[in-house]
Length: 323
Image (cartoon, rainbow, N blue to C red):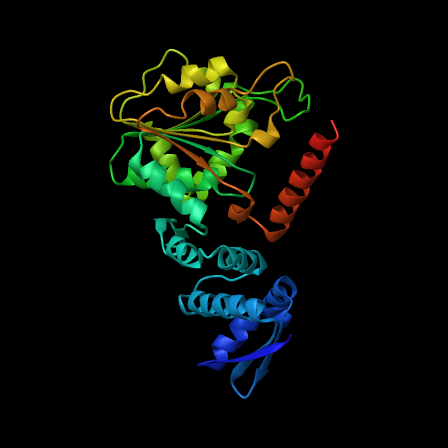
């Protein structure tokens, strides 16, 4: 049964932003909810079955709120809002998008874009150690670096230490020329990129000269005690259990640590179990430690990335059933 609903639009600009370039936003809504949306005399008319119309009404109202707040709206965001509306958690999604984590050196706001990201940020704020697992594009590294930069700016810590295992992603790179810093740079480039965007190159270089920022491979952490530091271990799925235990026991006085990883992208030899997976089992119920699991709905890098993650998860589930 097809039903009809009319929603007034306040301004022409709201209408243009709502529909998007070449009506891309509304087409995404129509395809996902199997409804038809028309603009007639300043009103939106939605045609479809009763349940889908109610969902579309909620999502459009939230889209208009996002537009009025001056925030970006794209197909991935619309699909996320639809998913939250279907789950009855649209209010939670609204709360998450208002959380400002930091400002870049250009004054751009860095915000949580999903409820999962908000839980992640709150976990970092409230716990000495946070372990975060999730697929690519969920903001694990970027948000952690943003919070670390804020802590450094506010003098909550004296040092920012970024590290990751120097494990080749299924490729043999052979001999790398240069000194030690030049040899490990390719492995640490994603951390540099996040720092440049948040701090700016000049501020980053100034912190580096003072020794306030250190970027190093995980092997260099052995034997150290890290006091007054914000420590981030990235790509932790490629750490061995021994390396993970070594890293976690480096935390000293007034130290905060964040461990990030994607269990679906382990590059260790098949005979070695990931130290991240071991840590998730061992530390599940330890006081002062929070484990955050981000999912496909938290992918914000690109709408296509979310679909790639979905496709791989479906493929791997089918493959596991046939084993």
